[in-house]
Length: 123
Image 1: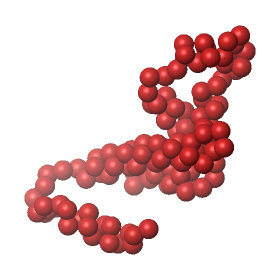
Image 2: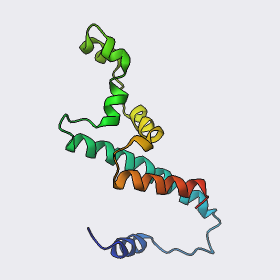
Image 3: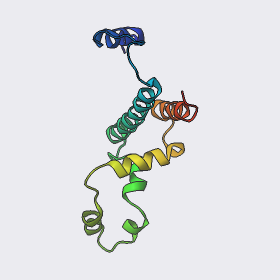
């Protein structure tokens, strides 16, 4: 992992000319948008990590989301999956967000809790 200061320095240098006083912007809006992006992509990375490290290729929370009680009671589980398969992963992403306390302990869960606290406390 590269030194965080070097990463930040490269990011800062990528900004063209930047003068805080010249800009007429509410910076906290940018902060909040960035935190929401960080939450979104942290959840996406968590899902990807769980898929790559779980022996079944799907994490615990994704199993709970994708295979609810109706799936287990279905006469034909393959047919049930085809009828109920989501076209995108936004539902899964929100399910993970709503169930952060059930995530596997680790860096993703910890980062999400920090990001959400930052939003709750207005940075």
